[in-house]
Image (cartoon, rainbow, N blue to C red; front, side):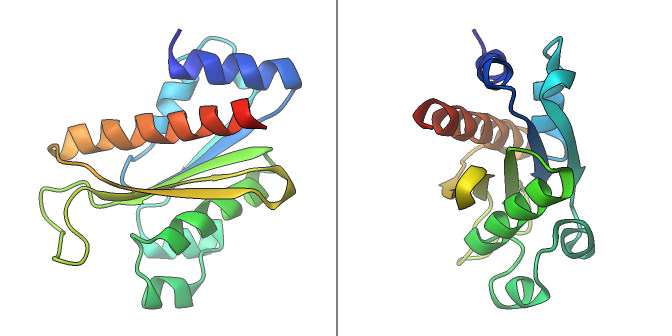
Length: 158
């Protein structure tokens, strides 16, 4: 069974919902979730927030967060997940922000650096930091898989 199928099965069993807030993955997570027949029962929607303005306007990422920490940061991933959860009224929200490459990296924030968040009930927020070593498409796939895995782990430990 795929990650997407397991997530769908778990959410359906308890009548819960999910949404996404994606930057560097460009909608890949939402696409993978909706590849599963019947996903409309638990998938509410997603935002591809590639620009900082969209992160602020739709997901309520604070301007101060973006200025102080940058778009690719733990705090931005946290605010994206919380903002998406509030926007859609979902039980769970996944967020991803990162540097897919091949350009855009710095010594402090190398290509492949990605933050993945999950926000859930009772104020739950988990953010993971990863540094992928692949090319742009591999980094996007790795980020999407890691986000789905983090959600699955969260659901099975709830």
